[in-house]
Length: 331
Ligand code: SF4
Ligand code: SF4
Ligand code: FES
Image 1 (cartoon, helix red, strand yellow):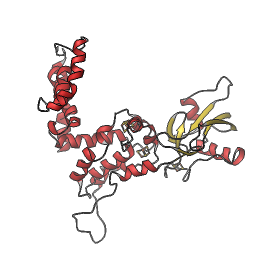
Image 2: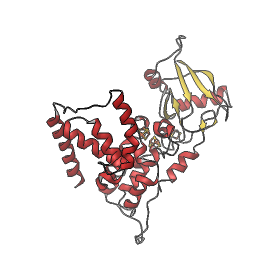
Image 3: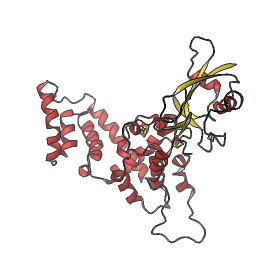
Image 4: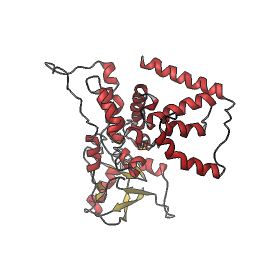
């Protein structure tokens, strides 16, 4: 079958242009095989990264039909089915672009310096501080090892980082790959720095609380790491340890659950006051939201009364069931 490949070509600091390459391919051909053919048969100047050709090395991350993926994992047939487009020519098209959130070096090759620096920022190595070095190796039980399975599957391809909304708006956010690694180390029973790590992931780096829970990292990760879920596990570890007045991030989650348990949905009047004002202990926080409250009041947008939801008792019992399950599984 004929397929038209629309490939972004770009030099640093230049606007991209789209080059079109027509190939005769099989549906089972991977996108990487097609790129290789373009380079070998049609245009030797095209630049892209590759190595293992087998979803192992993480080198071939790029945007295929507008979502970040591995070129050696995705194939032509699936891409055409997932994103059918032909510009009215009857010839299916596949668009290939460089990953996002990283500057382009050339064509499909991006500069991953910030990706690696952010990984480094979470201290991504098992700490041996405070332990005697064993004669042979640090052994783990199969159960302890199984705790690391999901995050341990990361091949550092950059697909999650490329899609991350939080990273796009916050240059200090370390990214889903780094936080998945952070969670792996928190869960690693050979590491002796768990509490210090959690403190660091709480305040020391822009991470855990900066995630907007957009789910994109979970959706694109080719290895099933589900970074957003891993970030959720760090958050839960912190919420289990910290009282509500510790910080706004912690309070935000705790107040939300308390209010929903109380009234079936959120009493917005109390929510702002309790989160920003720390249950009326934080005068500065209260003053910060006073102008917003006044503006809402003058425009008739401040809810004067709160009516509990009719399903409050059901909602409460659902939350309590989940909390009980969580407690049981952590025992
Ligand atoms: S978490 Fe998944 S998407 Fe992100 S770098 Fe690792 S393997 Fe790639
Ligand atoms: S869920 Fe969080 S970490 Fe994942 S892509 Fe969205 S903002 Fe980034
Ligand atoms: S070439 Fe190694 S993961 Fe694609």
